[in-house]
Length: 255
Ligand code: CIR
Image 1: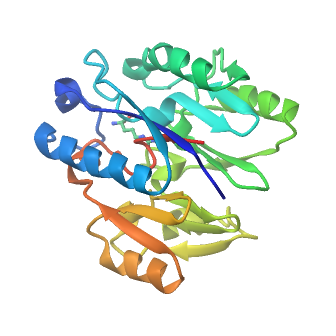
Image 2 (image 1 turned 30 degrees about the vertical axis):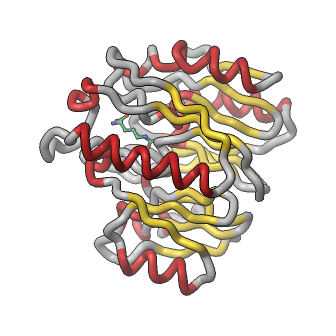
């Protein structure tokens, strides 16, 4: 369970125009930058060599780098975002990925797929069909993964949930943190599932990076159940990214 690297991108001033399902006010860039620095520091403390990319003003959502690529031990796959305003982020990420991976494949279209809809576990790659990720995009990824000997299982993301991983994260090889609304479909049968506490659904987008679980601050019951289950939990402020439907996983590519 060892990662060695991560890629992040600092938010720029245009982040106030980032996409959001419900407008709860513009994010405060100063506070977001502080949270972002805490996040990068936590990754470094967990053993990551972090490539920190500069802001990309033409792309307000570019800090959510996870959506632009899938990074696996076999290689990386450049995604094809379903949000039109985010499509151009991939060309900005591509040279970075090509510099770090010997094997790089890409989703060529016409389908769309975003990294936030992909959860890989040691036994399979789970992909959520969502408003951003469609059947054609999933089919293209399935063919690439088949070349690498990995199987893909498709999941339907509940209505109103942005991405599959908005509602789940991998805690270890067989354990998934998930919301009840996602897990009730039975999609994680065969895994050990830890549910977020009622009203703490936004805690589900966490990441396990080596020995630590990074989760958004402000979800005390879920944090407690993770600690009781034996995980080392570090809470990071996420109030500003949450206004743009972003969380811990969206902010980095990890490999
Ligand atoms: C978006 O709507 O695309 C961004 N505001 C949030 C992206 C979050 N990314 C993720 O869950 N992987």
